[in-house]
Amino acid sequence: MSANVYDVGDLVRLSAIFKNAAAVDTDPTTVSVKVRNPSGVVTTLLYGTDAALVKDSTGNYHADITITAKGVWIHKFIGTGIVTAVEEAAFLARGSLVE
Image (cartoon, rainbow, N blue to C red; front, side):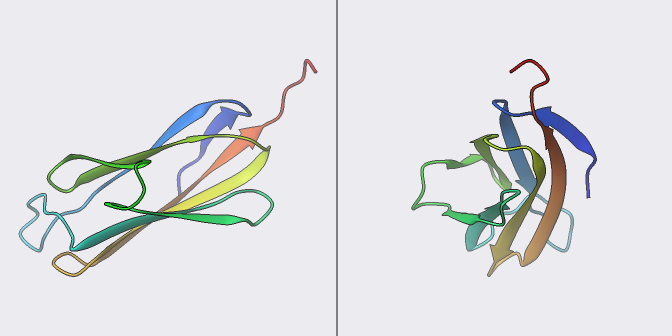
């Protein structure tokens, strides 16, 4: 898991690269990302259905999320089908000291 730290209000880019067994960037049959906020609420985005999950190039995907609460955020990209892979990471969001 990553140890990145952001501030509440930041726009954070979450990204993943999917590769086949030969280490070549390859699109999975389906791509989704799940984001769990510090309250435990999970939001799921599905590529091709949710415009917020974007394909940048073959095998490369991202989603931009706005940090709305302080605490630990966890996200997981999931590829199925042609490429089956999961990539999970976490980051910390800190609240403002000037409110």
